[in-house]
Length: 163
Ligand SMILES: *[C@@H]1O[C@H](CO)[C@@H](O)[C@H](O)[C@H]1NC(C)=O
Ligand SMILES: *[C@@H]1O[C@H](CO)[C@@H](O)[C@H](O)[C@H]1NC(C)=O
Ligand SMILES: *[C@@H]1O[C@H](CO)[C@@H](O)[C@H](O)[C@H]1NC(C)=O
Image (cartoon, rainbow, N blue to C red; front, side, top):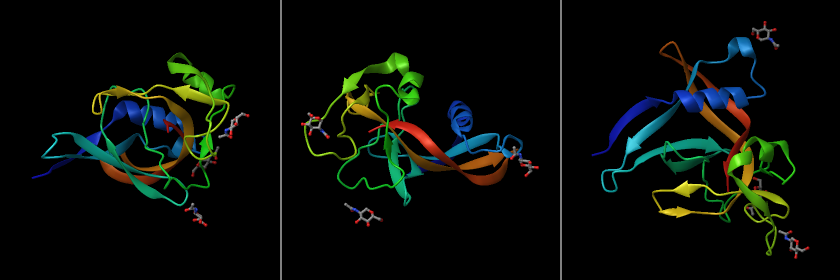
C-alpha cells in the first residue's frame, strides 16, 4: 500500500520563492508544496513536479540533503524553455562552491551535451553515485499554499537543476 501525504518543504519553498523573478511580492504565497508518496517495494519517498514547455510530469526520488535536483535528460527531453548555464554565467556563480569545472561534450548537441557549460556533481545515495552533469534551467510549476488554504499554481521560469 502506498502511504500518501502532503509534505511542507519550507527550505525549498524559501529558495523557490526567492528564485521566482516574475513574482509580485505582495501576492507571493508562503509555502510551496510537493506531493510525497512512499514506494512500498523500495521504501523510497517519491515526488513529482511539472517541468518544461510544454509541461510534462517528472517523477523524482526525494533526497533532502541533495545539492541539486538531478533530472535524467534523455532523448525525450524536448522543451522550448530549456537553457544550459555557461561557465561564466551568473547561474554558475550562484552554485559556485559545488561547481567542478567547465565542460565540453564530444557528441551531437542536445540537452546534457553542450560545450562551455557549468559542470556540477550531484550525488545520489539511491544510485550510490556522484555523477557529472550540466547546470541547466527550465520552467517548473508547483502547488502553493497560504495559511492552510490551497494557493495558486506557481510558475518558476528559471529553476536550476542538473541534467
Ligand atoms: C502587485 O500586486 C498588487 C495586487 O495585485 C498590485 O496592486 C501591485 O501594483 C503589484 N505590484 C507590482 C510591483 O507589480
Ligand atoms: C519537440 O517538440 C516540438 C513542439 O512540441 C515538436 O515540434 C518537435 O517535433 C519535438 N521534437 C522532438 C525531437 O520530439
Ligand atoms: C564542442 O566542441 C568540439 C570542438 O570544437 C566539437 O568537436 C564538438 O562537436 C562540440 N560539441 C557540441 C555539443 O557542440
